[in-house]
Length: 433
Ligand code: PHE
Image (cartoon, rainbow, N blue to C red; front, side, top):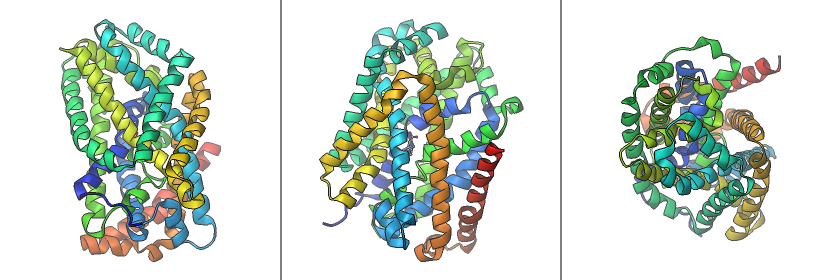
């Protein structure tokens, strides 16, 4: 059967932006930032350029070269079992990420139904906290929210990703537009300056290895790198419709703008309504700040509902790319039918998510572990793999042919083969000792 292809270059960009932009930028970014403000932002931007860009390009190059999903691609490139083991570790990571990602997606669904009637009442932090506690403290409500989110995502995987390409065409611009309106709105709130100040000033007190680790982990999480999603997406590109550098810059740029806009919506709002530090907001930060901003807006209920619907769709597009990895593996390696593989993945993630529904500290712990340690583990394994097979994959040639720049190819090669692995290994050691 001929391999599926993206309809156009823009279709590919939008699908890649759809995978990148999700709960990571809107829910996780401000929460990961915690109390570190501008310092976090700076390290994050550094990580996006030094980690994100080269790895994004390398993953696309592997997909473009092999025209196969991750496990097949690694197997084709590498002798022995290294490629297969790395692929399986990536799949396990995607399942662990999905176990909490789908719970947060479920919260979005619940908010869509609850927020309309309540929008005008969320006038202070206590009301916002109360709403979140009532939802997250109700086991069955959270369970069904997660169930529905997973069912929608898995059903999309069963149908195929072509629909998502079309859907993203309209929804991504709509999400940008709403975020833009919200940012302007939150900037006009009284006390907003404090939030902006926090966002761009260096708070060295909360700086430490933890801050560096979280910023790098967040960059990898938000850009969807390290676990093979971009290998898969690159494999659906026909040779003439993808410039690796141009595509990477566009997708990474869009995702970074969304993350910064979300922070501009959330921090000024938080400061405007409360005097506590946003680090106290924890993982419910976005779920508390957003309803407060909606409460003060003209047509707040309507904006609130549309926002959570868009967020849900953005989250679904990301979840689909995470679910597609294990599903594609089961189909390719064991010949399973798409629906059977999707159903099993659905069941595994649902069961895996139960401890997170029970305990918020478990949710926080598993998020921290998977998004930082497991994801960075994937990135490290990938770099070591790329280091060994650099010439065989011909990444430098691909970059040179495309950009005409040997310097750029050498910089990418240096970053992937030396800089990124050394930084990750240093982080591991500094955490152990
Ligand atoms: N980037 C997605 C988000 O920000 C999450 C994701 C991580 C998707 C890894 C695919 C791979 O929500």
